Length: 485
Image 1 (cartoon, one colour):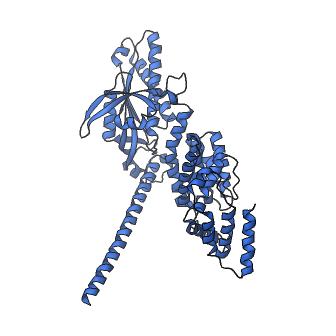
Image 2 (cartoon, rainbow, N blue to C red; image 1 turned 180 degrees about the horizontal axis):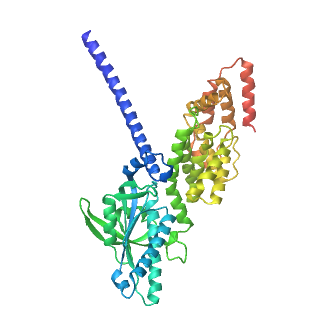
Image 3 (cartoon, rainbow, N blue to C red; image 1 turned 30 degrees about the vertical axis):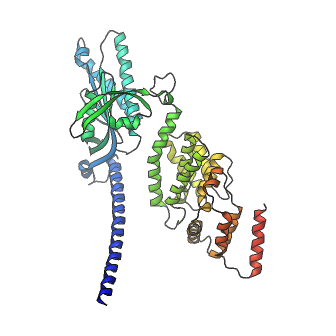
């Protein structure tokens, strides 16, 4: 008896331990998520103008240490002071330097870079600070190319006049950066860490007039830019770091007759695909926070499913990168309108699209197409284009899955919470009719979801309670009529 009791207690403790481990895992996930949100909010607050920050917060912000997991630092050295100062006044030299710095600031703003500091003849800015983004390596390289080209053109102008001009060396590095925001009227950022130090050394190791990038930056931009191995740099605790000179955009991504400085539409689409990661994180976070709790089916998890399925079916149907971008974006926003209103949520989703997407450089043509794709998901679906057919199949993907019944039950719970439907038996009848009438619009969706529809329908029919045989017979005839249409 004692042995059985001991076994019982051990078994009970094992179950309790399992439950505790499960709770700990959940708490760890929640803590990581909360830490990420706090970090994002702190960085956002640090970027706000001081006059709108409540009193008592400014001092804290000034001392607050920030951390960015991926930022790209650009460090520029301007040299040749001795040569250009001969025969010129000090004020003329300063004016020339100011002219260059002002142009650098314009270019930095164009690519949404944060100017960090200017000390004498050095200039530093960063991408991914204070607003985190996944495109900052590309942004900084494009800015560096424009800055280098500007100085090159000025040097030619001065040379034609028989005068010397500044020369520059540019260094880039990508990595983790620690920052501290300070200032009352204008917030400035002081960046520290090995990422900054390496960017500085990249500049000092660059050839005159060249852009020298670290291996960290190279792996993130090599697909788009022509780069040439420049050598290796010894770095403490890092070993030998490879360096590359960036020359220009690859021909496939550059506008013709623009010496590889200006990206074409193909590059813009590739860039937008990478930028979509940032947009997706923002919208999914918004959906998780702002969608009503009683949306048991139309929640952020459903949005993720539709995004993935739209991409899968899209590639299966042979559409190009830009169309994949449009599909993924439409899928991301297709249920966002539920934040505003349950009814006509497709329309409200398009309003959110028109408000947000211009900030992410989507063209008006792309925005209009995305809105059309979203509106095509309104039931009953009536798609007129391939992209609309793909999104409709993606949105109703669950109809062809083995887990159709439990998923459809979450939709019933949602409709019940909206006081739109209260009878589960009626719901099952509606589902049978809907499944009988439904067919996927694309060959890819039909191939992916090959669950036998008849078996699916029979499973639901088994759940229906009939009042009498006559009711069942009438229903079966109605179903046959739907099939014959």
